[in-house]
Length: 352
Image (cartoon, rainbow, N blue to C red; front, side, top):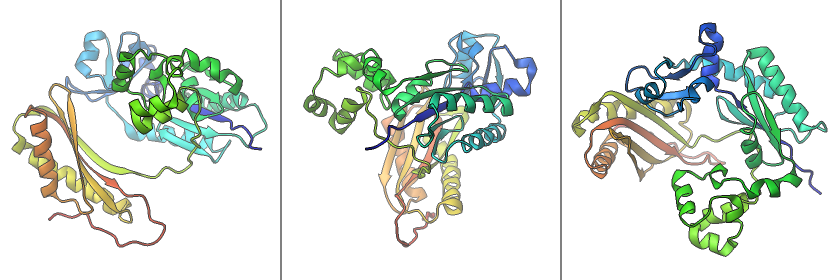
């Protein structure tokens, strides 16, 4: 008989902004955002004071300033954030080896081996984080990753919420489908168009029709809307891709003017693969374009030996697909095949 899992999802509160306010006490209590400087910059995060005005991550800086003219935008300092993240993860390691980081500021922890109430463990983790970093964290506690992650948002900031297994059916009934893992804006709109707004609504559709309407993803949704999530906490995540991006200071109107940046990005990806992942086979090359109107397109081509010529073909294809509009951002990446259990011939990512 298997023991019910005890999963904690820890999510730091406005991590980048909180660090900046910690480093500069003059910023405490003020609406601040972390992001690129200038009118074309994009916010990485916003403090709770700024969020009250509608500012949020991925918002263009100029729009955030329109919503909150007193907003203070500070530049990104990733080295500082990584340093804090390392300290937080070290604290996690005192309680479990089963840690699955999702980003610098959040992670799943499996504490099933503890006899102690997981809510008490979460409180102690949060207390140690504050004591050693002067940063606050929120936590969600439940028997699976889906519910724990949803719960961590329930008492933000600097709080925690536990949902035990017996409470999951009632909890899911009125939960908006937008809260489910993997349901983005487009999927949410699609579901709303057929009268599905809550998980309770989705539960009225049988498994056959879920599969018919949404394919394999429909079968997953059938489980998720009932609060069923069998995913384990993965203590080591396999790198799936390598990518580099460049946001231009001014929109680039002519596609040929993108070629120098394309070459530089391709070279950067090549070097990253060579330095850290040369034992991993390559399975595809990807080019991403974001246009002046913030629409974007991604073009992918299966290949085990990417070249700059192929990258240029994908760039031209994406530019035509986007209506030949001015380009705001260019990205280049490769997708990596899963590691082989045995030694395999290495393929070079080279210029042809």
